[in-house]
Image 1 (spheres, rainbow, N blue to C red):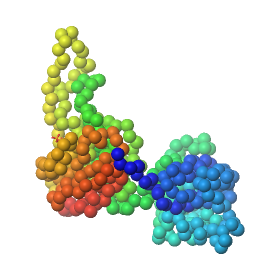
Image 2 (image 1 turned 180 degrees about the vertical axis):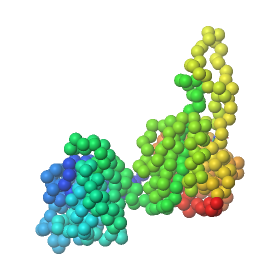
Image 3 (image 1 turned 60 degrees about the horizontal axis):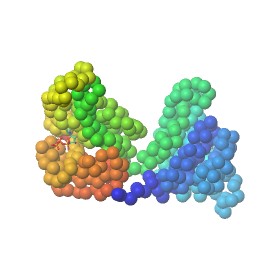
Image 4 (image 1 turned 90 degrees about the vertical axis):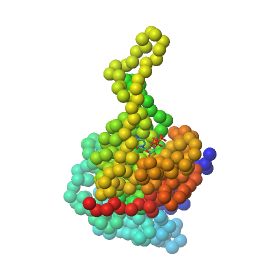
Length: 411
Ligand code: CTP
């Protein structure tokens, strides 16, 4: 058993700013999650935010007195805006109202939160903004102009989401959920090894139909592949995930295509491959499928003899992509799930599939678990990534891929 991984926001000091909006109720959950993820959180609230939720609630959840005024005499130097922004690794304003976004866009500083946003050392303390407002307010050209200005000034704008609004209307402008904001914050701290790159990932098992109710499949949970997709997105890549039948949430910012069989996975991947820089094949593709799937459920015939059916081999998706002409071929990474002789089998697959990197793991032991251990096998040798959570390993793997990646030749 590997030790529990350090939480994703361990040792991070965050300022969580609340401006006025009904979405303030979500910020209570957000501060709990941030603390659970290991962060220390200094909450700063505008006067309007205090109309929606009390500083008492936010103090209880963050474990720190909330700052609400730039004239707060508790700070010995009376400079709360400097003190709070100097110790912060990031400032997250959630909810950010239309009015507060307008203030940020103009660089105004007439109360503590906007003052602090302006005073923060922007090169080492990023500003993340989670808009929350009625859909008409969000769509208004003035708001869109202000948001564009914030982005141009280097702020990261998170969302907004879409759906039912507190006012009864439906549309864009909802603040993202607390868990989504947490994921975004965690992602913002990851190194951008793959900025500007695109990554195609296969994940999960495949189902090969025997008849309408039965299939051949395997124990793959898809967790490693989903972790790779998430880690690549966190590293700044545009990510497409082709997933076999699994019950896992789609990582934020990842485009997902669901398939069932190996042939469907093949048919989804092949047209996409030339449009991606990197292909990571983590899927446990079933090697064989019944030659002829029964149209109706196979029934017992009373003879006591089980039915027989012929199997045929599925296309090898990774090998097919690795054989594309050089100008269409993404940089390919294969996985090898083995039950023994891991390095020997992985090296054999490196040759057989014609790919620059194979990632080996001991299959049955890791299926369904949240941790794993990997060995990277390439022309230069072997490198072990010791037991850790699948997400930690996926982040390490993404860094290794980025270091080895070579762009394909221009057509
Ligand atoms: N793979 C694939 N298409 C297949 C079979 C495998 O894309 N039809 C990919 C897997 O996603 C993985 C790599 O090839 O990246 C190796 O898969 P694995 O099942 O370990 O190897 P096989 O080629 O099936 O060889 P064997 O079953 O003999 O170990």
